[in-house]
Image 1 (cartoon, one colour):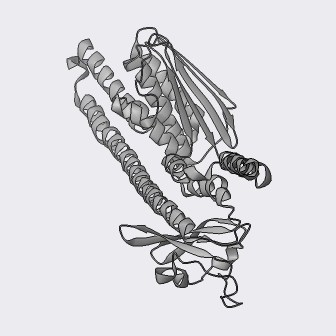
Image 2 (cartoon, one colour; image 1 turned 180 degrees about the horizontal axis):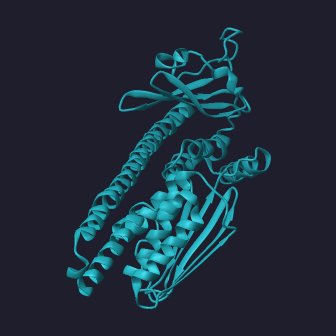
Length: 389
């Protein structure tokens, strides 16, 4: 009886303590920090924040595959007959150049490749398992898995789990590709928009303003009243402001001259005691044309929002312009606002803050970042950061 009781107690203790011992062994001996039973749930949560191939591959390398003790893997994209290696671990990337991966797809995919069954000169002899990444039946990539500790073997249950992860990866890959295409289309649209602005500016300047000047020259000085002259000057002045807004000519000479002209134009147009301070340190650095153009539009949009919606009476524009980095802040004392769902792109669009959303999009197009801080009655601060790296 005593012996049976001891056995029962040992069995119960083993059952209750196995999971804790397993977790202890994984975390302290093998360095695995995440519970493997939640892999699918964890991965589905993490990939929703992956906006690029590198971030997706980084999640696989640092958070998912370590739980399965996989020491070698390659994440390969297939597009229009070309091979792109997005991420590798423990494998020489040169092995993938101009190599035919067809032997690892089709019927060979999803099957364990035993050690020693491949030809010695096979550049993919290290691969123990290949998984296909398909979108709507189309092969868009391969997930190649190699050495695994400790037994260097993949069971059928583990292959099924990995295939589920591969299916999720294919979906994430599809979303990233679609996001890239949408971003490219948006960038092209922005380019067309800027070209149209330039065309309109040239039309107003070379046609309308010139014709108005010719019309004034044809009039008799005696027949021009002071009211007519005042209205004419006001109209031409406003047209020149529109031309400057559409095509900031001073941007050809750098950010500082263009922003100086923008500030001067805002103050002159306001007529109600608006104060705008501009402090750029230093003010002689030049950047790629698209960076300067988008940054100018961001400052312009933030300032116009402060005047039009926030009814601000004071705007401070300050910036640290380093050769390879830009930090810029536009702060106002206007009414401020509540974005409701937050100052992310989706929240701004949902609350119809299209101008602010446009600033975020412009920043992303040049690899920059915009942060918006605002609350009702506290004004708004727009912070922009860009780095050449």
